[in-house]
Length: 250
Image (cartoon, rainbow, N blue to C red; front, side):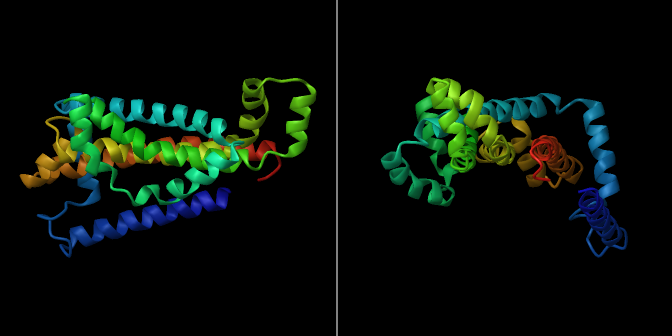
């Protein structure tokens, strides 16, 4: 695992150096993109100035709400339908094709239902993230050994106790895979919504900067989104690998 991590870091460092070199020798025009080192400098200056802190806080807080809802509802829904065979068979085609549906196309409808404000954006983030959580949780629950389920029945556990003490702990690595997807999808949902129809948030600021050729704002905000997403996913990934190591799977 250490070798894999080192290899990933080397690949990222190589890509960073390559883009830096292409920008410095002007193969990539400065009007199109500044060197990565300058993007990082601009990000630091942007955060230090604090003028976009409100937009950053709004986007990240809305994404966090959408993420928490997606994980909570997704896990609960997966537990509820996992043993209901007819319902699973009816819903499996929807799960398989769900991401072919342009969820952002429902944004105007959500505005009609929930009004202007944060609710439609959070709904988009939730809609994008929840299915990934459901599918991965079901994948984990389907792999629970029958002996554990028999043990739960012998111990006369209720369905809730069985889920909390037996099946979900066993399926935790699979649930965490869904959690990683939900992080990315929640951010995509919020920022995409802010692109489409909003007057605040990081998505709006990126769109406004793009329209006005303000690379000193646009690229740093994009990098900030990447940093947040990658950091959270790395932390969840570490948790996932720790669980697998405890079970002797890695």
